[in-house]
Picture 1: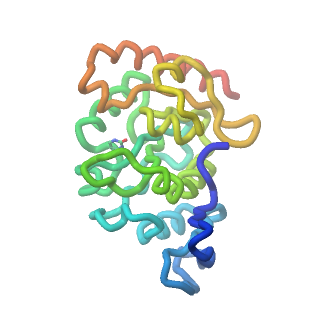
Picture 2: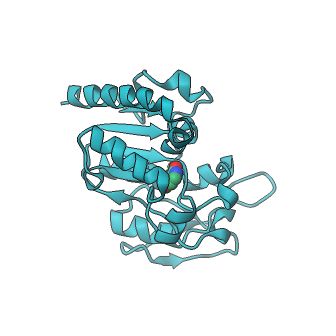
Length: 229
Ligand code: URA
């Protein structure tokens, strides 16, 4: 369930690439083939994971990036916010949600009683898609192991998935956001981490009248996270 932990790029046409072996500082000990190596992120610590992500070439998005956008915030946060992908400003600064949508996200968090640094914020993919298009299935799959490990390391009480791409990727669903809102979803092995779905702040910038619904979603998320011991 949820995003894949293994970054498999196998297909019947291409031979399976070797798994890249990593030392504890994230340096590659052996890369044996020309195709980008499959990285097993499942046991990496924060430092190694960030190092691996910073030099990832597992999908074509690496070609257009200024830098990877790993994630930011409290490694022990109770709330984890998951968005879609870096935009132009995030690609420039190397931090998620620092553009206009990010400012609105900060206000949403403040309304829910959190400072930005008190939550952990990450995206489904770590590199900016060209022209801010939606990430493709092979790109979300290639990045999936990194996000899965981030979630495992933070082990939040609750995940707030903002927007369609984040919600559908995390929950492996094609249900529209409007129908995922207001329900308690679960990510990962049973019992699973509670997931609340809400609209993306970039959508709210275009449709400010929907802010009321996001406020309802935040209240629902607060209620759920308080219910978790
Ligand atoms: N939108 C996202 O989904 N993530 C970001 O980091 C910025 C904008």
